[in-house]
Amino acid sequence: DAMVIQNPRYQVTQFGKPVTLSCSQTLNHNVMYWYQQKSSQAPKLLFHYYDKDFNNEADTPDNFQSRRPNTSFCFLDIRSPGLGDAAMYLCATSRHRFPYEQYFGPGTRLTVT
Amino acid sequence: SQQGEEDPQALSIQEGENATMNCSYKTSINNLQWYRQNSGRGLVHLILIRSNEREKHSGRLRVTLDTSKKSSSLLITASRAADTASYFCATDAEGGSQGNLIFGKGTKLSVKP
Image (tube, rainbow over all chains, first blue to last red; front, side, top):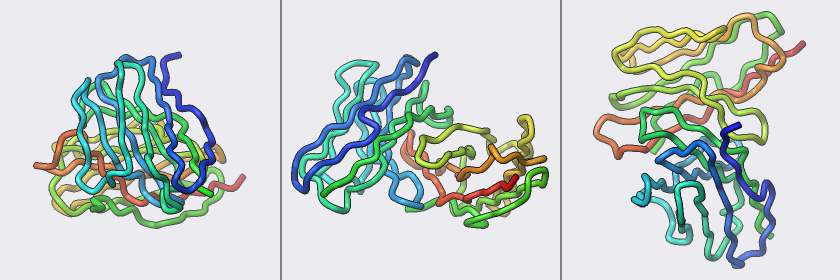
């Protein structure tokens, strides 16, 4: 089945230790998104790629970076995780930009110790 | 900044009852979407309603949109225990950056068998 896959599902990292989260899709969608969701809060868009075109949200901290080496894969790099970066990180795809529906992966739960 | 605001924040009902969740937003929109999120999982797209539509149905789901009041409602009829989840509305904003889907905080629905 076509889907959005996120690895790992759970990630524990130490304060200040770089970490990379992975997302892959078999939907062949043009757009890939990364959201941060903290407990009982709304998902917050960090950035998205339309093909190779990177679009960063204005309030996304510089500590967060992303790479999309090909259509199928997208990575979220957190250069120096702080305790406040502990959250669920959701990857999503869509055929084109909004208003198309977005397909979400199961998320990666990041813990920072 | 938050665009959508769901009401109520939490809702507990018995199986078989109807559940109504409301979403209010601040600025003019092109489209509004509803998503479901099971605990600790990614979001699943439920329904999209365009700004020129007033009502839309999908199975046991009914969505209404009142652009004059800047509000939408999601009705789940004949609820089941499996409907237990958080429900989010998500909007774009007219004139906003494309691809920027803004989520509300969600309504946590609990359906008791």
